[in-house]
Length: 232
Image (tube, rainbow, N blue to C red; front, top):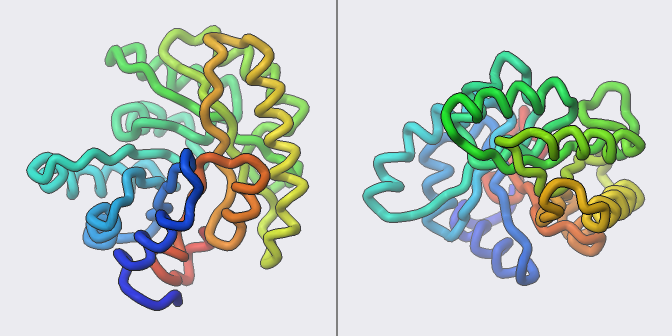
């Protein structure tokens, strides 16, 4: 485990990031108290793999956030099941893991029912791994066109996991491929054409991801410490 408190680690990572890069604290299996310590240290975005955990943490922290005047953005960074679309639409401020027209339509319909507009990213299965979620690289443009037709979604970029490896250099080709797709989308004039976010990189690979163009990094273990169930 990294030395220091959660607050120390958050401040250390934030100070190391280039201007324009957003840190999302990957809070899978973390407590509201751990998240609060991270937020007090300057974290402004929390990411959850599971909708129900995002709901619970947001509810637990809402009174303190309101009292303290702090602003936190809530991201869904795990696979979204269609039957969780309504809860996700209510609980988070960005969904980073849209990987099919079916899921996109479900989220759009739920947002339409409440008058909400949801920023979304397309999750790219950059390694074409059969066991992972995400649209294959060759399907990104088609999905982007369909999302652009949905009035309550705003396509804002791409997200990728990349194959898990102990060596961050192994992820570089997949990050580079996703950046190429992002650049193509940015010039394709799809929807409002406002591609802002390229979400790539976790605790062991975020520096490589930034070198390849990421401006969102999703970090868990390096901020919160080791958990046997957490590979972020």
